[in-house]
Structures are given as structure tokens and as C-alpha cells.
Image (cartoon, rainbow, N blue to C red; front, side):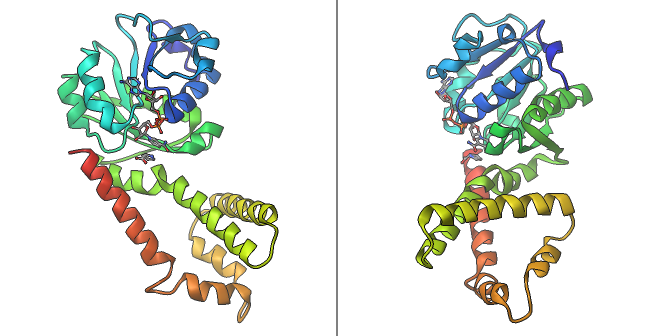
Length: 267
Ligand SMILES: NC(=O)C1=CN([C@@H]2O[C@H](COP(=O)(O)OP(=O)(O)OC[C@H]3O[C@@H](n4cnc5c(N)ncnc54)[C@H](O)[C@@H]3O)[C@@H](O)[C@H]2O)C=CC1
Ligand SMILES: O=C(O)[C@@H]1CCC=N1
């Protein structure tokens, strides 16, 4: 959806690092005027001001949206320093920090928590959103259109799902990048040149992900289509799918640890 309707009241972005910067690029591509965006970030990248966005300048009196994209550990200080949000929709991408915490900082405000991921940088993010009681259908639609500037959006029925979402899709790209690293390293250990092994591993993850998205349904069917009886894949999977030492229990521990950290950050 075009975001030009936000141009009159403007949007304030607090924190313009990896995630805030990716979002800002998406919004500018969707018609948000640079002059309507106000970034607060002591270390905003140079391209932001070069694009004509106001950086650390005077804020609009009545912005349409306030987006929070600082680290959760900074959030308390940032919220204390911001004052009231007036009539702005507050959207936060921070892991862990709860709707109740934003509600205390901005009494009565509509607040939406959003959990994107770094493929947002190329418009292929997946973001889950959930709002507080004040976030009506229009507020959720607006939050969705902001996050759709960098990929797909799914809505959660309940905030309690957010730490699990963070552990699966928010942190998930890091797990996949590590899979690429380890697959490439294993290929190199089997004698491939390192750059060829990395190319093969990256292309395999990208292609398998695209196939899984296109086919939908149960990925086990796609796995079985690769696995010839008594073939190479079956030999590999006998290690990877070992019920005790395989990927299943490892990923279960990985996601549980990430979700637990999300809950800690929310304390
Ligand atoms: N990187 C990721 O994969 C994802 C990150 N997130 C969330 O996004 C938020 C930001 O994470 P990243 O962009 O990765 O971090 P980052 O470190 O790249 O960006 C944070 C930005 O906040 C700025 N900042 C620090 N103190 C500030 C202050 N007092 N006022 C204004 N700006 C301040 C920093 O200069 C920096 O540019 C976090 O809350 C994280 O949980 C959510 C989903 C995915
Ligand atoms: O590592 C983190 O805490 C953030 C949240 C999800 C991805 N990065």
C-alpha cells in the first residue's frame, strides 16, 4: 500500500540501525516523503540525511506514527526521554518488550508490536504483528502497511505468541546463515574449494526455501522427493534426523533458548 497518506502528519523513527534502516528504505520506496520522516538516532547512517530525511532535528507536534527500533536494553531510557506520543500509533520492533510496557509509557496510545527479520533488507521479510486493546482495525491496518513495505505480514491472535515468533522467524535468519556456514565448511572438508562450497550451500538454501514457499504444505514431502532409497540423502539424513543427536533436538533447544531470552528481555 502507498504510504503517502502519512506525509501530512509525518512519521518519527527512533533507532535507524539494521532494522530501522531497512524499514526506512522500504517506506521511502512506498511513497513516504523524506521530508515527512524524522529520525532520532545518534549514529544514523549518512544516507539518511543525504536522502533528505530530518535527523535528530525538531519533531513534528502530532506525528501519525512513532516507530521504535532501538535495542530492547535501550528501550527504557528511550521511552523515558520521548514524552507523550500524542495521537500517534506506536509501532515497536523490539524483541521482548511488552505491550504493557509501552502502554505505561504512552497511556491510552494504540501500540503494535511487530517482529520482522533481516530479509526485510531485500523486501523479503516476514513480520508478525499484534496490537494492544487500543489498536483498532485502522491502527493494525496501518501497522501492517508499514511492515509490508519490507515483505509479508502475519497477524498474531495473542501477544503471548510473540517470543516464539521472535525465536523462529526473528532470529531464524541467523540459524539459516549458520546452516550455510556449516554446510559450506563440510563441503570444503570433503575437498571442495571454499568459495565453490559456499556458492553451492547458499544456492541450495535459497532454492530449497523458494521451493518450500512455492509448494506450500508439508516440507516432509519435499524432503522425501530428494531421498532415494538407499541413496546418498538417506545416508546423510540418518545423521541429521537422529532422534538424540540430530537437528530436531538441536533446533528445539535453539528455539527454546531464544524464546526464553525474549521473555527475559520483557521483564
Ligand atoms: N536485527 C534483527 O535481525 C532484528 C532486530 N529486531 C529488533 O530491532 C531492534 C533494533 O535492532 P537492530 O536494528 O538489529 O540494531 P542496531 O544496533 O543495528 O540498531 C539500533 C540503532 O539504535 C540506535 N540507538 C542507540 N541508542 C539510541 C537512542 N537512545 N536513541 C535513538 N537511537 C538509538 C543505534 O545508534 C543504532 O543505529 C531491536 O529491538 C531488535 O530486537 C527485530 C527483528 C529482527
Ligand atoms: O537477536 C535479537 O535479539 C534480535 C531479535 C530478533 C533478531 N534479532
